Image (cartoon, rainbow, N blue to C red):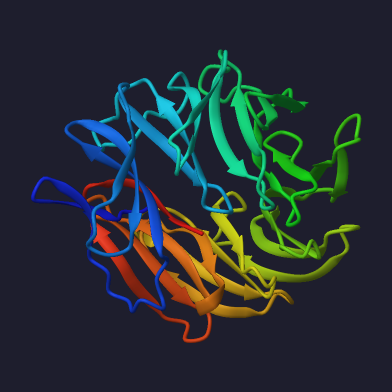
Amino acid sequence: MVSILALVCGATCFNGSRTSGADRPARVAAIVRLGGRDAVEVGPVDNRPARVLFVSTATSLSNLAVSPDGSSVAFMLITRPRNETGNPPSPYGCRDQLLLMSMKAGRIRRFATRGEWMDVMWNPNGGDLLAVETSAEPIPDWMGNDTLWLLGSGNARRKVVALDEPSYHCGFSGSGNAILYTTTDHDDAVWIWKPGFRKPRKLFDEAGAHFSWFAVSPDDRIIAVLVGEGDAANIQFRRFRDGTIMGSAHYGPEVAYTSIVSMVWSSDSRCLCCTEGSGAVAKVWVYTADAKLAVSRIALPNAVVTGWIPSRKTFVLSSGDGFFVSLWLLSVETKKLSLLFRHPNMVEAVHVP
């Protein structure tokens, strides 16, 4: 994701801000390398020292996620060495524990698995997490079958659905009252599960279409979903309650339907930011809720949109070029990027709400 911390005189500090105090998040949580080990730290966005929450006795940590109220952080414990580029191995046989930590008290809950935890995301209304577990023995050269779990208070867990195929993307509705997912094999539909459902149901489907990434607006009015049809790809803006297409933003043949790597709505449900591609050619787009282009093709290496700051109407993005990992702010009003941090010691970081 992004990079925030620096080592100064033996103490870890947040450093390098290029924006005014009103523009920047108050705190940042990050995974940083300390003495050959990964640590989770949280601190203010200035030169004051950050607080170490956890130091890994295994090889590395990954998939940092902060709760909507900023009180807890979830991350994954990886047990195999990073590869020569410094990244976690891809990805099977490496993640065996999901850790949930209180930022204030430092209490840790551990969720073990017989397979591997692949992803985790917080319910937008707080409370539980959605975690993706893949089977322990995936098909050679492909991916294992996935199970979606809700992780609640204590060490409680509830199975949402066990798939006979890999999931492509999953997430909560804007209100947090439903879980949605797409899969890699039966990708002509978007599926939904709510408490009280005996099994997931199709939210909508489309013959000949291939649905991949999606995001539901915070007001639960619109679901934006990336869809491939033939050689072209576009983002459909559908009414969430019944799947009716309300608008479409066409990418064209140069963008594959699997190329979107992140999508985040603004908290007022007026704008959607998405990042496309990877490497040095990654691009950032912003659309309005009626599928009109608001910000076009900003180039940002390995860009991922991670959040939204309502007071400044800015999206938070991370980016890395192989040497530095940086955190950026994208203003919807000015359509300009401003650099928040740039430092080489970070593995991941996210702003704390």
